[in-house]
Image (cartoon, rainbow, N blue to C red; front, side, top):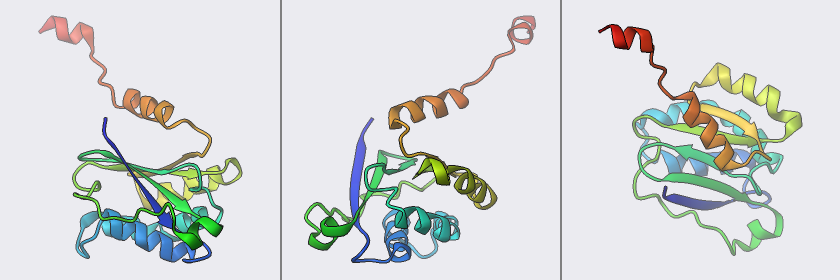
Length: 156
């Protein structure tokens, strides 16, 4: 699986809300993009997570058509110098077609973030920021597995 990473400059250079808008512009650059409205609908929730520095070491993960995209945020001196920043446009939008997004949240924020996201989107979820990314993808893959009714199958 191909993975693309981006590191977005955040606080104190950008406010958390501006950081989220930058991320949305990266993922869904066209104003009429279907996913853009859904991403902007969670601006307050995502901005809260950005302000708490949840994305410092744990990425936002976007699964969709094409490579998996990981988005980290840079804070403090790293944001000021912009040394490791990578805000380059993506070749194609990862939020085209069937896509999903996972936001990292601290253990203390996880329950309220999950509940708030559930009210706004079926594609955007939250995970504990200490959860291993590969572990999470295995869980979501197993959730999508197909169950076959063997009795019905063999009767036909």
